[in-house]
Length: 274
Image (cartoon, rainbow, N blue to C red; front, side, top):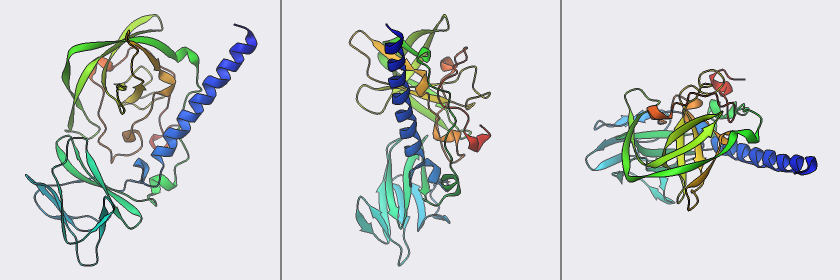
């Protein structure tokens, strides 16, 4: 490969990474993205009112219910609702976004608990956001691995950013790869989109230059022979890296890598990064 071709390839690699990074930032800082969250409210069978959402909220065996006062309105799936509205029993990691004025009221289930999490465009965390520090893209952190499916998906319990909360994932397999001369592996969870995988991990940079609790890497569907690309330049922060109002999962113990992966997103400025 000529020097000119190498330069062109790297330019394309860097441009593709920048496009990915900008998309991550856009989702995070969207008017109703994670930086717009103003409260994390845990529901029980007692009606509760919150300063950043309309109505009185409760949950029970029949699921989540809100009682709206006269003059209060939510849009649920585009339909105005008034008075009592029943959201029903939501699936784990599922949720409904109800619109209230210029806000979105996220109604969801996390770690076996029902929550209300309002998102307001004017949230100070969002309006003050100036972007996420990241390592410069470097092709040496993009490595080829092999996906090894388990005979059966393995229920895997992990901790959460919220103390005492747990998440359970059905891990379909693991990914084996080499990095810095070491053979490593990561337990994989289902990703967003058919066949995609997601790995949560920490490494020797965690708590030093990258967020201490976790980072996430999305993997495209493996090839027929199990080949899969792990581009650690795209190691992304989860919402808990920016706000305490997130319930993000932590990596399983086996995903704590003993190498320093100096790639991907760094500690956010909101947590003292630079």
